[in-house]
Length: 154
Image (cartoon, rainbow, N blue to C red; front, side):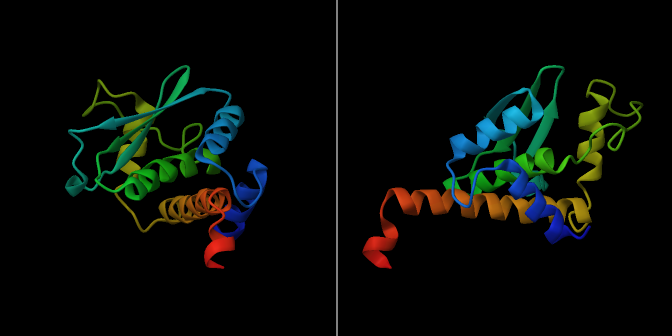
């Protein structure tokens, strides 16, 4: 399956329609993964290091840690990219296992995801960014619908 097909299938699988709110998306991701989902801004996370957000998995929760940004849209894209990894099933099972010799205090799943992300041109990162863009478009569509944007400017 190519990236566009995978992204389209993932969007359809959410059963949210073409426009939805961020809250609708949060509910769908929580239900799909059957886990709590928390989003936390880390003021000390510096995007110049190349990491804007990271998805951590505990026994009961999915946690998205993201960098601070003055742009709400930029912050949203950080978070949606991590949601996209969850929705697409990236790093499930042993896909992101990593040895614990160098980073023993970080759970293996998280280590693996961090180490794998260094290649931003790989298919997984491209697919996640593509899905994040589609999710952002759905959220924007919902905002435009709520504000009657198309009636005023259409």
